[in-house]
Length: 388
Image 1: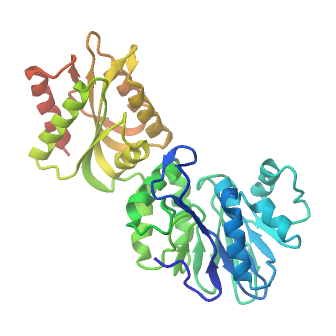
Image 2 (image 1 turned 90 degrees about the horizontal axis):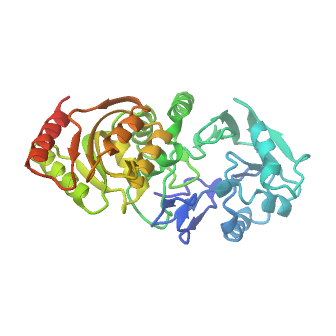
Image 3 (image 1 turned 90 degrees about the vertical axis):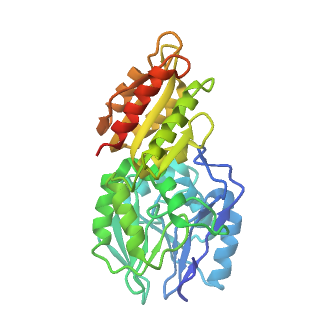
């Protein structure tokens, strides 16, 4: 997917293939892009900066695209450091340049850059405000909690471009060609997943605009089949399942619980469930487990008991789901314990804190290793997970 789609709107962003963890928690094997765009007109606007770790490369791209001219405006749509980390540096480089952003972002600027005085350089914009660059006109829309409270998005009227901030972003540097949805889904549910209602509000605003291109702050420019991308965002932000299927997430200490999880997967596949995903919460990527939990309409959690509670990898997983507003799903429970199984009770309690979770009976209780009696209960759980 090409980033440059116009003679007057140029991509000046950078790839980061050296980063190990995005936001110090998300594995990004293919890195991430920090996107920035330059609009050349009578007045020149830079659309967002980049992470400070890539400032030098970005400044070189910017200087080349400017061709000797000086930018008039820096539009700051989002204050998170992976996008606004270079604001102070580029402001020092171009002292006449104005910074256009939300009032709330103006308050945040000195929090990140306490050695820089922005007081005479900022222009606060609110819902519906416009800024003329000449033949291009920028129109600003507030997008609070997508996924910080200060966020704005920008619509360029003449070329019908939506600069969507973190909306429609994805993991993965642009130098890696890959299918959009998988890493966009993992990005969405782990970064923006809690904020479905604000995303819905933004989608309603976007529906009033004639959009030809979507330019996110991470990932490729989207120019073809925009209904596909917007449709997925609509599904995701309504917390509706994207597909029928079952995620079986297990946290096993010595392998007994894992064996039960894989046995259940066999039973479900034998019953005709085409999509059964099994994830090991002790070893697999937590962000992918969260992604699959939201992708499918059903889930089974299986965990060992531990210190009178639940094995910590499962506690961590369920805590993440609670944070990300997991809801509208059917969930089965498998517990294991060698002398006093209690993980089922703990998992149930955590699931009951979530919205519209249908906890499926029976709960299967294992003592160390699965026996024939457990297998009957597991068959009953498999049947119950098939019910509509």
